Length: 502
Image (cartoon, rainbow, N blue to C red):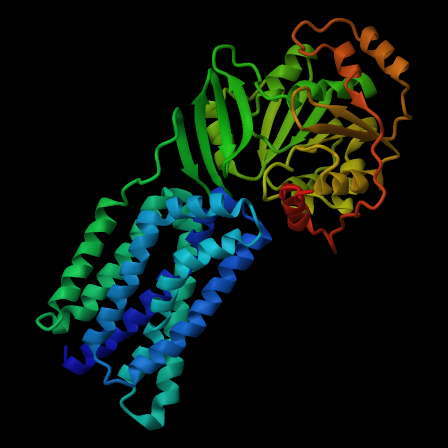
């Protein structure tokens, strides 16, 4: 291979690999930030803004450097610097995101700070490669436009490969640390390829590239302490899942928020709101079929079926990894009237023509809530899938004074004439029940609880649940959420903001 051809091949590879690494890093950045900041529009807006600003600065800086006698060795040195910046992300990424998340206290600008600190340096350095490569490859000024267009096309092809590969291969099948290390390995190998023809003059850069490759092969050290009682950890396409044992209870956490809990000794549900869900039978005593949107640990199924034998329960969960973790670690037992469907909750409702007596929306936990599961269009769809006299239940995961739960209640009230709110003992949480049933007086609710007879496995029992009903909420001023306008992330962060000092 002639020297000129070798240089063209190396330049094309550097540009292709640079584009792939840049986009893979952008996709992986969300997995680093999500456990600390959620996966909201604020997180993705911060990520995209940082990467766009980095591209602009990197293109400008790379063009400046390209005008200073560009060489293939110089291009390799720039790749080494980009790899060094990536190494900081590999080693310090989750720890630094934790620090920024703690210091910013859940503010909406927190992910912008974290994304800037972690991802701006490697992104700027990776962006310098394309304009530098254009200058290096342009042997004829009359064809510089063709050269630039060809190289940017190759870079974009690399970006496409990096995006698809990271989305469909790295995140679903590799732990986050190994995925980051693999991307770093591509950068280090690319640096070695670019430096190979000039290794005598670039020995320090070559040594640095070898060190980066060694880090990629051995994997990152874990600086953050392993959580006490950690049973399992898994990064999925949707979230980071952890199973942790603490004080005799096994917890299922999603991006740091508890989504399920079970007593290790007995296997009983250890969260408050599933124990209030049987209040639905006070409003519709003939409940036989239950649909739960959101799986969590799935332990509510056994709890309900012990108290109400013969009840059939369907779960809908968008993340297949949650179902796997729940089966393996949380005691979820399918069959005998318990089924798990892996699907988007709204799509599941749209594609089924069957009905249920009770539908529970349990998807409103944490900082990242899918907006399409909050709107009035979703509530109307739920109403069409309820059997006559059925009940729609909502785990608000907060008190009704917060902006987001108020908006959910207002949206549900747009479709259903009756709202009943039950407090969760010992928790700042409320369960909302809605339906076409007429309002029941307190005395009638208690009478119905007694008529259903004792249910020894329920704790609290039905008469106690009847006493947990709170006065109807005042929803004046609460917004109606629609597919056209559902500012879910803003409302959640408004509720998470600490109160202003007096």
